Amino acid sequence: MLVDDKLMTMKEAIKKFVHDGDTIYMAGFTHLIPFSAGHEIIRQKMRNLTLIRPTPDLIYDQMIAAGCAKKLIFSWAGNPGVGSLHAFRRAVEKGYPNKIEIEEYTHFALISSLLAGAMNIPFFPIKSIRGSDLLKYNHKIKVIECPYTGQEVCVVPPLNPDVAILHAQRADRNGNVQVWGIIGDHKEAAFAAKRVIVSVEEIVDEYVVRSDPNRTLIPYFVVDALVEEPWAAHPSYAQGYYDRDNDFYIEWDKISSDVNLLEKYLEEWVYGVENRAEYVKKLGAEKLMKLKPKNFYSIAINYGLY
Amino acid sequence: MEYTRSELMAIAAARELKDGETVFVGIGLPNLAANLAKRMHAPNLIMVYEAGVIGANPSRLPLSIGDPCLVTGSQSVCTMFEVFSLYLQAGRIDVGFLGGAQIDKYGNINSTVIGDYEKPKVRLPGSGGGCDIALLAKRILIITPHEIRRFPEKVDFVTSPGFLGGKMERQKLKLEGGGPVRVITDLAILGFDKETGEMVLESVHPGVSVDDVKKNTGWDLKVSKDLKVTEEPSEKELLTLRELDPKGIYLGKRG
Picture 1 (cartoon, rainbow over the protein chains, first blue to last red):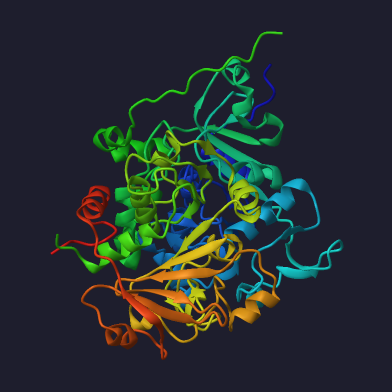
Picture 2: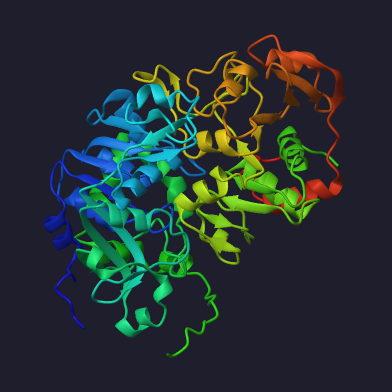
């Protein structure tokens, strides 16, 4: 069964589904961060974007530095295990290269907001945030009285991004997406967004997906664009395919501290390459080999034939 | 055996964890302390990582909280929403481990901003799961180097609430979790007054005086009537710790 022509290049997918001024959610908690899509957005010089991620990570740091962002919605803006996101800090502290508006949550609050959007409900109650100063600065988070117990509870509004972009290990050509390892916010992001772009390490035959339907996180009819692009998550990782490039995350601290070094990085690794395939070639065989894990297979399960 | 104060800090934090408990592990020192406890006195410690990994058994000490080594060989992987709702909010987390740029007299933590929120002097990463953990875990351990700039009387921004302006204030809000119980630093171990929620010096590390601790604390710190000296690290604790962090990524170089 071949559904439609979702299969396209990243360049086509971004051109078709992302527009200036859009609200974008690029999913992936440390794992499967769609760097390739972020770089393509930078290359296409998109502007005035509202960028959403619990952890902006290096990808939004790069997009902020490239001038794509108008606003950032987030809950933890650091370089995990390393320190600051320097481009984010320059934008917030000094308005460089442009001022960005921020809307700040806790992890639990932001993911609940996204889930509320995905479920199409008016708000989501959580027993967090009360007592924190976040309440003073984010007026979208409200305290209401529980209609059943009368106790105070925090609520967050539904979040429905214009576009969700995510990377996954594999999909069939219709766009039934399978993910394993840390699944983070992938499913909520896809179901909450109006348009969905998915890149995958590999396209597999439909029978591979149908042999293990429990592993399908997102069905094809939620997906608008499908891109086959190995290594699209580097320097983030894809469980079983390649490791997180921790050396680069550490190096980014130095690169991003210095505006000139950062410009040079974008020139060389983003503007200077045509697409992800060129980026991967530029990374070189030695680096790629170093990031390849040894195989460790799960044991096949029996679904039964009925 | 010779040891550094940072090593003793990690070891003292590990000793706070009991066998069979469920601990919500953050990156950095908490991760080191939890992994140390698991290899020492708490083999049945359940490590839950906020990326959604339950019962991790990492082969290496990860740089990030979402490292692939946490997944391979773990007991379960769930979504980010599930880890915060079904585990943390539902009361299934015994211990939350937090750090921060500033910790105040009542155990409130700031990891958001130094200076004004709208015009920050230094913009820090923000809450992440910190605030959620502080409000929803049964008890909180705080681990941080002991410097005066990190211990102001009142934090610039309450990211993760401790006892707010005093224990009564937290009780009034009827928050789920129990709040902070210990602050473990490279100089001392501190607890909280049962009535007021104010921080109290409970134990100084060997070679550290009460005055050293007071000089590095931004208010007139109360001292417990039965002040102790922290037990020195055993050889086994030190060797296990160094095996976990051979390059000194978390603890700095020895020497």
